Image (cartoon, rainbow, N blue to C red; front, side, top):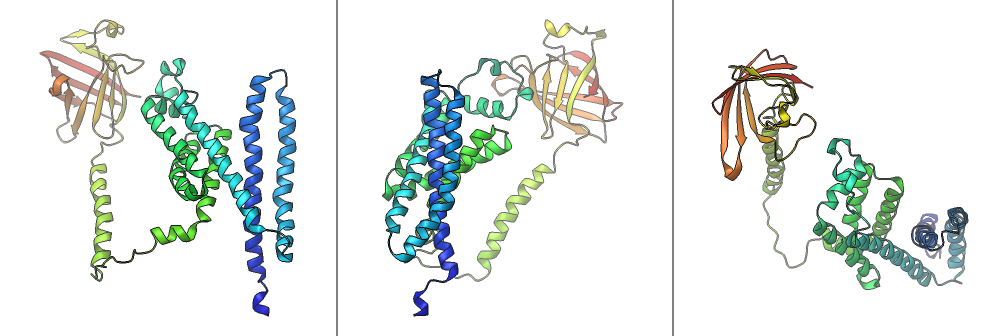
Length: 376
């Protein structure tokens, strides 16, 4: 008879599942009202102040918290006494979770297609990239390609539709979870406002919970060897091969990372003085002469950009290429890219190099150039 009495651990695990169901229902109802219903009502009836709807939100928060804590206890007692249909309760509550996730994620999908998310901002287009915060950088990146936004939107909408049907819930959660995890990481590391971040985290946890409810099915697909497949018996050879693959990939990239230019050389170098064929160029010569260099950018990966504009790097007026510095002979080899795949190779004699100052002597396009550089 004792074996028929559930252990305290089993009772707690059953209660915890009930608690999670009730918690997600509370979150779903409150979030759906706060982000969808209240927002719509304020836009339709501006005379009904936000303060009024904020009061309703506060009531819903308290009610949801009390429900998430109290109802699982009531439910557990009813289940022990056999006077409640727990299966039906789970079905209803998880249905609310599925429909809430579908509504909210679908909303974000249509926002991308209709342009209310990642829409063009004209002031942002005229801002320097270095001055943009994480939110503007993210929005500017995704706004650049409408096609990519539509693809992400279709995945969100398609996955949401799959959540609306119980038989395809697992497929919908599997499709949407990688997207939501990626969004959460972007929101965290790019400083997206806390409201959007919290929504993304809640959606991610909801999808993860739906997947965990089907753990047996998931483990059968991903963690078990399918029947009928002939196994290769190779002892330690496979483990050595696995180790080799990972190690080779690391060493391959490490080799190229070790070829980076020294940090004392890389950075933004301002052309303090430029002398061409014995004539010192005026400070404002760059306004009419694209060959009057003002800034030289030396990157760690050997790339280089020469800009005649002292304030911004303009694509049309700048020159790009690669460089390589030979410290033993104090020479800088500059390879400037031109149209149609052509390139110019220039040798610069370097003197008085002390990681802050350099003097370059260059013969370029039959012109003798002397450049006095200062590293900012």
